[in-house]
Each structure stands twice: as C-alpha cells, then as structure tokens.
Image (cartoon, rainbow, N blue to C red; front, side, top):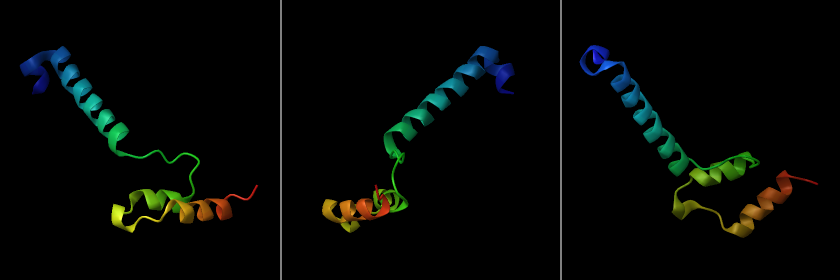
Length: 67
C-alpha cells in the first residue's frame, strides 16, 4: 500500500527518517551503562529526589570494584 502510493524511494525515506528519530531519542534519553555496577545503573533511573549523594555512590563503587 505504501509502496504503491509513494514508491520504493519514498518508503525507504520514511523508514530512514523513523530510524533517525528513534536513534536520536535513544542517544538523548538513555544513559550510558558501560563499566557501571548494577547499583549505579539503578541509581541512574531513580527520581531526582531519591538519588544518593556522590559520597554514598563512591562507597558503593569502592565496595563493588575491589582492585
């Protein structure tokens, strides 16, 4: 139906624009979690009024990553 109305190139452009918008949304709103502990990831998703202080987060990081 879409191909018959706007053609193959138009269908591809709709698909490409949708992918670009989704990519920009993920890059903007989803935080990076590489090299973070599960506690740190959970902290990222908490509402701002429930977040721990940076000192408490450093204690979690130090106990979770013994070197």
